Amino acid sequence: MTKIKHCQIYFAHLYSPWERDTNDNCNGLLRQFFPKDKSMKDKSAAYVQQATDAINRKHRRILQYQTAEELFKQYISNLTIQEKNIIKLKLPSG
Image 1 (cartoon, helix red, strand yellow):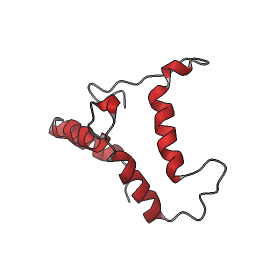
Image 2 (cartoon, one colour; image 1 turned 30 degrees about the vertical axis):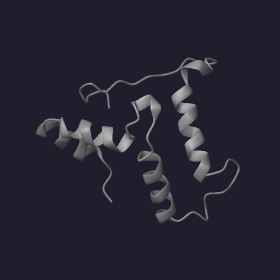
Image 3 (cartoon, one colour; image 1 turned 135 degrees about the vertical axis):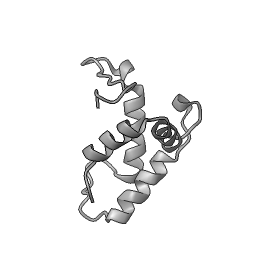
Image 4 (cartoon, helix red, strand yellow; image 1 turned 90 degrees about the vertical axis):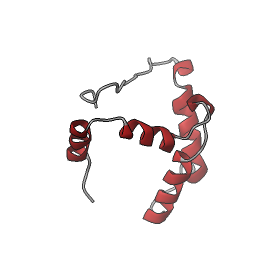
């Protein structure tokens, strides 16, 4: 990911929960669909996709009330052809 232009990676410091607000919020969103201490064995691929779509289409204050899906599509549309080809090579097929 560090080879993709304008892609920043952020690591929160250990024992610094104030640096992880967004991460904790995302974990809360996941827990709506996948409760803690519950097995995921009975979850179908369709259910996981439905949960993923719901999370990615949720408007978020941190994103100025845009969705992650909207921003991702916007980001991808601004990539060069060469950058898009690099991403295609790195994505798992299937």
